[in-house]
Image (tube, rainbow, N blue to C red; front, side):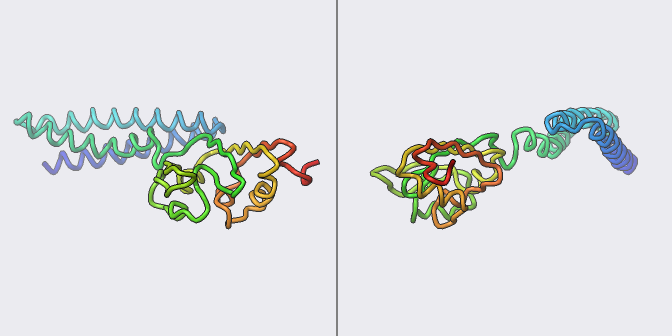
Length: 197
């Protein structure tokens, strides 16, 4: 039993070190984030499979009961796949693009002035209070601010004042609390007002 544990620890350590070395080499060769991501995922799955095979073979020799073996393997697989599955699906989830509009009152994504949903930080989606006769489901600020890119499309003269406040990052309007460092604003001439030339 102690030999099995020692072999397991050594195999995990060696595979972890080899994984780091291979990733370091790949990161030196490739600078594109998508290529690095694919390398990281491929290497992680490859070394996970090797680890399961080597460690499984080591432990299989000592087990007489198939039920005991399957119980330990399923627990190990669940623990081992927790991070790869979370990484594959993304946790917390990150949207590539969020397309937002801007209301004349400064609302966006059904985040309206005075609604309690503006203060939700523990969920990515929430249900709003009533606004214009309807309750809505909306992304919350944590989900919006994790997005890789935000595209604002703003039209109409009645939104010119709010667009100016959005550009200044005014946190007193709901739209002003969305991160602007990764945002692109497309506005028509009426909404852009006199500030655009």
